[in-house]
Length: 241
Ligand code: ADP
Ligand code: MG
Image (cartoon, rainbow, N blue to C red; front, top):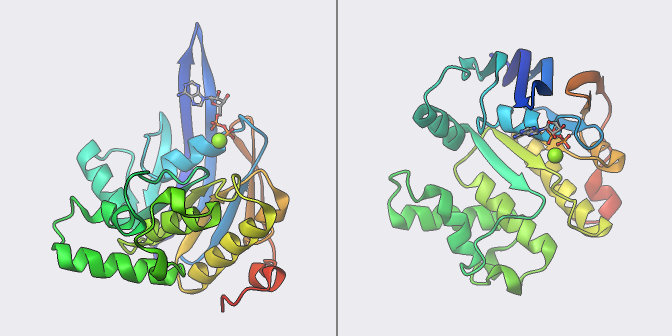
């Protein structure tokens, strides 16, 4: 089986004045299907740049990136968007929900341009909301939901097209610690069901729920450590088995 993510010499340099900013500089990493990986490092160390490259939102200036065996560095913007839509779901710190749309419409959104009939879109969105425990709230708009519930809607939206990989940038950063635990328990349950996860965090307590931690500094990968994950559901006392 191909690695899910394989980067060699992955670099993203930005021109700046008369020099360059090496936001990411020569990163070699291999992540296999089924892994739950945390990416840590101080502010400005290149975590978001790495996530954007892995998520096919940006292209490297040097190096190679294979996603499930496919070299994505040379793809057209159209094909890149297709790959992203087929394989990857995104979760952000600030949820990025459409404020005027209810949870169901938010979760249906990624299917809009994919030629899926409306009835099937709705069924799949309801199933995704069920998976995150929010089916009864599908008619609520974001302002009628708590922060944790909004993040669940965002996770349902990330799941609805059946991605192999979820990329999360500080997914608990806007939540209180108890709610953050519940979100991490949900990620762990999804991971046990086979979804690979790459989660950027500055919080070592959050990284402890992953099985592997990458540490970035000055655009370089300086540490890659596998560890036994702490069970978030047990810590939160919530029933995600
Ligand atoms: P982190 O997410 O770890 O805080 P980033 O990946 O956002 O770090 O940024 C890494 C470095 O690259 C920082 O010095 C940042 O200022 C720089 N950088 C990121 N994006 C750009 C850009 N579009 N143009 C110029 N510099 C950038
Ligand atoms: Mg960042």
